[in-house]
Length: 460
Image (cartoon, rainbow, N blue to C red):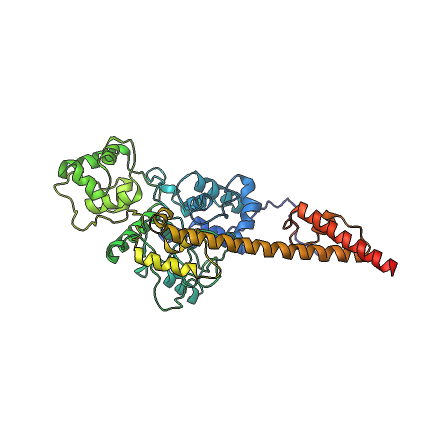
């Protein structure tokens, strides 16, 4: 009896489209603690066993997103400010999210930024220029073997406290006392980009206090701010209609009718002209102003931005609990003590190696003109000592390079190689460390010495 076999389906099998990079899932997606876009990009690079800089230069930059020098420069440079915009609500965030989404086949990466609120949130004072984190969150995630990441909540400039642990966010490494970049060229989440140590620890058993020009407000109000922003991020996952300029203008008009234009401006810490521009619909308030308005009006910030349950009348405003300096920027003002500055200058004059005046300014925080006004003689002595030290060091380095050049030239001559300046220079540890004219003069001296030595041996 013949054996019957099942028939095979030989039709072409249609496979779903493949993404170039891993289809990585964002952490805490759909919640107020959702991962930021810069954190997602760092984890994406780690999943491919490359650095964020290599992934950016090799994959994202050819798609027209990012900037070639965005990993370069000091913390306050334009390139680093560009990196801070990746979590914001502007064109930089939109292009970067679109490029990374194209590589990972994800269409929801805009929710890792503030792009859902771009129609009501102006860009100034939106995201901070350096990283902030909660060490207790890091320790909890590490102990529970959960993914260590940077929430979008921590990237906002108005958030100073962690709502989960009710503690202040850190902005400098507890080991090396240096600030951290939003995203580094070679960085691993949860570890310092400078000393590579764990950021979730307190080596000195004391909590690092973020450097602010003024003391932060009471923790309860800062935690209220953090919870308001956390709810705002979560609401951004749902499609909402936002408050229109007409609604905002009507709300401001009701508030000014209640207490007046100047008192309202003082409460919101803005100028009366800003109040008038909001009321006429010419401009929109920045996020700190929205928070103050929500506190004064007695509504949630998310309800205010979505135009939900706006008060139609305000017989009085709740201004008792809103401090004047809440969430405003104040430049630090260093106090100048002439006696202390004189003592510091005397100590600097006895340091070895002597510091430059610029280094002394950065160390002490004093301005150049202030030092020149009070201590012109000390400043002149400090600059002269540093200039002499630099001159001596340059001479020592030049003698070392000449000695290396002579040694290489003699070795090449012993090997039977014809001597040329470039032939000797390219074998030095620093080919451009010796001036060409000085190298040519040194080579002529070496050749004369070799010729004289050869003549002496022949006569002997």
